[in-house]
Length: 380
Ligand code: FAD
Ligand code: UDP
Image (cartoon, protein in one colour):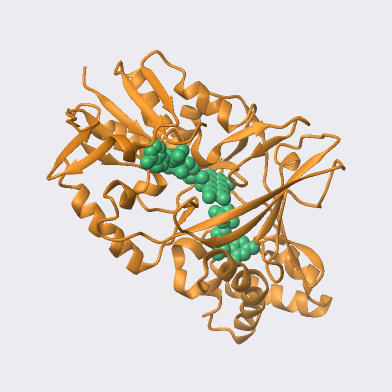
């Protein structure tokens, strides 16, 4: 029986741990936090509200394999996420769609732009804003500039510290403009919240006789790497190391610190059952925070009190949480230097948002873990 040590009890680590365990192998999972679930961690507060400590997390996927796998560990509450943005004093749907257009333009002009968009781009199309800004039609370019300024430019500068053009497609294509009246934030086939929360779902994944979980244990205090060899507590480690933490930290920052974006969350309990008109309101033209999320709306819970969180983006530095890898080409090149180093360690496997330095959703984290398991299960 081979030894497998998994660093990180987030969705990536928990998924691969469970797959090994179901396959009959014993694994150890460690996490430096005292909680499981990584950034998907949630808890029920004293008013009965499910609060997500690391920001709003909504499950959505088109990957049936991922959905079926997670369904073994939770029941689901159907939930379709809707987001609004505060623009010119009105709350309009985001992704920006024909309904948003109707709400912000005078009727005649709205009808004309809609006609041009439907004729030139096509009904039911989703177009990334940077692409719409380059359209041949001057009228469409003018409309795109309006959407760019009111929805994307300020929000993106706040969130990342960079302009939309600098970040490119992997960020900006996540929220395209919809040439339709579709007002859901996601159009994936499977859109649900785990009935008892993400923590409970992940706890069920980790609850297995073959999984030993140790919380409050920091890998950097027990793991070291040198000349292609892995050491655990100073002794050669001959098992597999599956690592879901920051790759630069694993290598002692020997090639410098990778850039991340961090966040500060400000939570407030409000003495009302509803605080705002949507589950999430994006502040795309004003305020220092990017968005306000209201947790009671995520699974349509009705409580006497509600809880909101404001997100304030900020630079990452020691002591802060590295929430988002920043997908600029120079950062990817920097990451690749670490990756090259990592490839010298034949039993080291990098997995997840931090170790792969990729801005991924939860379903992709699960899919990547499933794929990695298939790749390594028969290797020592
Ligand atoms: P993480 O959740 O970051 O888990 C990594 C774990 O490794 C952590 O628990 C950490 O403590 C541990 N660790 C790190 N270093 C060490 C170490 N040295 N020693 C021990 N343990 C260590 N996705 C969606 O699908 N829908 C959403 O709505 C959504 N919203 C998001 C909102 C925000 C604000 C953020 C930041 C992300 C959001 N995501 C969302 C993405 C989602 O959080 C990730 O896809 C998912 O958490 C990735 O899981 P992971 O296990 O790879 O990483
Ligand atoms: N975005 C924006 N305005 C919005 C919504 C999104 O500019 O109203 C941009 C912004 O750069 C953001 C990216 O699109 O970081 C992706 O948005 P998403 O909601 O997917 O971000 P996440 O929930 O992952 O933070």
